[in-house]
Image 1: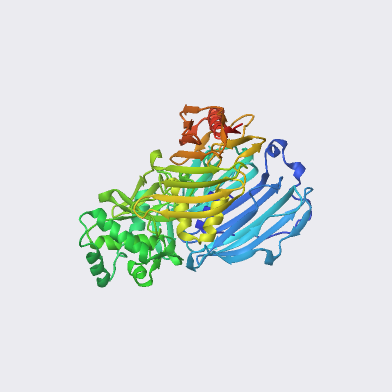
Image 2 (image 1 turned 90 degrees about the vertical axis):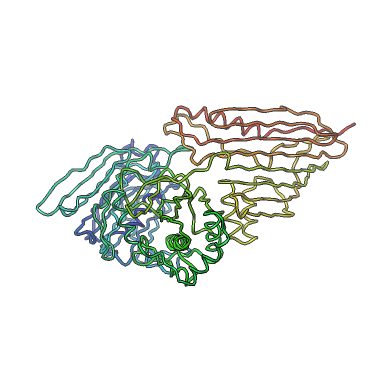
Length: 639
């Protein structure tokens, strides 16, 4: 299922029981799928039926059924996850497989439906659980059918209607029925669809029913937007909700933010002893930044991130005193703890919820309120500064691509305020490297590289060097470095404590850097850092092209020492110079003394949002760069 769909399942804490009648006649034969739905499809949703019956702000029943025909072995529907917790109970669940003719092959046994604690690797207390159902069968095509029901006694949101959750998935029939008390009219927003619900009213309830039929698959293409930006779905939120006796409203961001503020109010208190220590630590600080920097590093050094997922913990922070005493907390607790320390020195800060992760384009909509957040950070208005409080090593005020460039909700006294976190300018996401390569007559070489990585280009390396062993770091390095067989002689990575950058240095020995043919050596100019992101050609591009993030730039200089007795025979092209709205590339090759060559390369890749008919323009520019990066100089042994 999609990231978005899984998030909704997790958030709504899940669903189902149905009276399961036996049916011995063929079910979902593949030959009954219309041909236009099979074309370009990995899977076809034969039927998806769900009802969500809301009794009160805290109580609801969710019934769900899906039958999906799998047409290809490589598909995106390999498993399903049904989450639940202390506020919800899965009352029944069933899964079956049918062959291509519609004959029942087998039923999943009870012990094949795994029931596990939702352990995320960092939670020490967690009352969330999930049922995991694997959809695999040896022969395609086949059909997988799943039904379940969940009873809720606490609600933080309603499930969305994810009509077409995946690329390469067709929809034969999908329907969603939402029933609420008359006084609790739900909120909804269409995305990439004009489907309207059919509404019926009784003396007590309002029922909305959406239905869709015959939706053809959309083929995924290189550099496509996230599926949720292209495929149809309907976001649905409760106007009113209740969890653990706490009632709130989601009519707008201001109202929802006010609920979150009240939920977390007065939980930012630390002991008199720690207050005194905070004042002592910051006594010599001359600016607010120096105070923030001192306290942020204190928290990083003394507190650790461990998720605590109990009760209403998804929204309400543990008190700052809890973190002080236990020396750990989740994103909410650590942000609140930092807020408490800043409060002691007179610096106001604001708890902020954000949808963090890879797809910043899916951050919540400004005009539709929903509980679409999974992380908390801290904002300091007076400095216009943002703090990632779960990091043990990030420089003060640096967010990283995990939370940059997203719409976030400030939880203020006045209520929720939607703003956007800053982005890194392209010239802040850079790699500057110098490399010395000493060649031998056989084509072997020693390679010494020193690089400074900044901004988004340094993020993953900082995380690795901080959080994994040297052995694991080296394994990752080997997988990332694009070189043929080599031996690592030395490897070192040092993140800067005050700036978002990292120094990466390594030395390698290679048995075959250059190719030898008789008295000639064919020497690649850029074997260790080539550009290889040129997308595959497509016959006809249909989807727009999106390359997210903020872009990046590389500046490389490589000095080659030629083997004794060799000289340059051919330099195919001494200079490459390509300019485009998509970026910039320049590379030069020059002699330096009797036995050296110097290769210099500049690369700039910009974020891209263009229409489908511009695909070949982008591809042509990338292809030029990739081809230029394969340039070889020919050396020849002197007579």
